[in-house]
Amino acid sequence: MVKLSQITNQPNRICAIDASTNSLAFAIFDKDELEACGKIRFEGVNTYKKVGDAARKTGALFQHFDIQGVVIEQPVYLNSPKTMMDLTMVHGAIIAGILSNKRMPVRSVPPIAWQTFIGNGRLTTPEKTLIRSNNPGKSDSWYKTKEREFRKQRTIRFVNTIYDKNIDDNDVSDAVGIGHYAVHNLNKLFSVLG
Image (cartoon, rainbow, N blue to C red):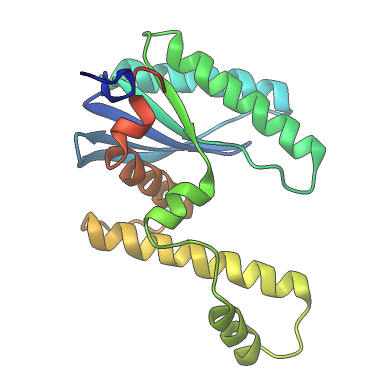
């Protein structure tokens, strides 16, 4: 007997997206091969202008590439309700730009899911202790920033090693990391019931 949860309509060509209020970093995979990656910056004097620019530029990107599915990093609440609102508006504009060209599945992935998958989960206590012992007397916010930088560099190293690239932009490397997670979890992300 076939379980419905095992039936998939897996896309072969996916676009992985790491979006911010100012840009969209993307990585396009054909099966498990990284085909293209880059970053699109949004222009505008306010959030609404940037949202409109995001929809237009995303639509143009998806007209240029033959994409069959999308995986976008879920927005995560930080400390600012305004930033969260702006980010969710940009996400909506990006998804509208994607779906304005072609119907395709769009999935989201929590940041910690793909980060853990590539071996870049939360820092361990010994890693945090090492950062603090190498940099004594700093503020808690300084240490948090240093930890974020450490993890960004770890993602960049992973991406450059696995895909034999020379990417130095942490947003683009995040998009590739999201795509790496996606191509290895297609059943989970794109099952009929997913």
